[in-house]
Length: 341
Image 1 (cartoon, rainbow, N blue to C red):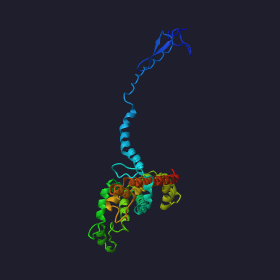
Image 2 (cartoon, rainbow, N blue to C red):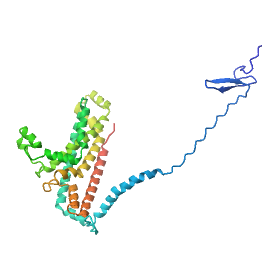
Image 3 (cartoon, helix red, strand yellow):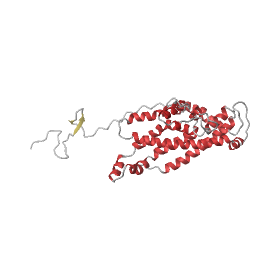
């Protein structure tokens, strides 16, 4: 019987006296005879070089920004709370007067009228701006060729300075029959509708509201458009198969899923309306008389026209607390009705 070559196996599970080990190469394993069949232990990984501790703590890079924020925002805000209880005139010493500034505010007819104007202006801006913004979003969300161009055109006024917008609309509201809006009304035969838009006490506040709506309706459109594009198409398709019409799909599918976008728009427009200043001051300066006076213009005039910085900061504190309270109540209510797809 022929013997097997030395170094080869003699059967399943058996080997000759000399075992066969594998030597790894670049292309495979080559058998090598004459060595014990022990696997070579793996080489331990090379130790990584210890990282050096940074010479500068990471938080040190935040310090400059925090210092600027503290000087520009925190200190004036805290100082304003303090000055609200003083008779400070803007320069020199001051004395504490307790709650006298707030009592004066409650007895100030001009300030109380400005509260009513602020609420009316805010209500008009919130309702009309978001209504137009939603309609624009529905329009540019449709499959039309010019939708990208229309989005840019509608959004463009939102990036313009509010003061520039106010001066532009002062020309539009020019009381001369041959200029601005009055000229357009005369050209189409609506001469009876010509008005002194900013000079009439019954129209000045609503003219400012129209100016604000024109500027920021495109901003609301962008927020609503983002919400519309987040509505799953499968839900609309399923509703269409079930026989739902266009209005029913909007009412029961689109509108509930737009709740987050509606929350954002209502919050932003409400806060913006309550603290509106630039457009009012540049267009009417609160006039004629006090017809378009808002809380923001009152606190500005009390501080920089009449030199009553203590009373002005009291008005500002009341305005800030009022805006915060309205925003929190509004946010809690709107968040409660939000749904997800």
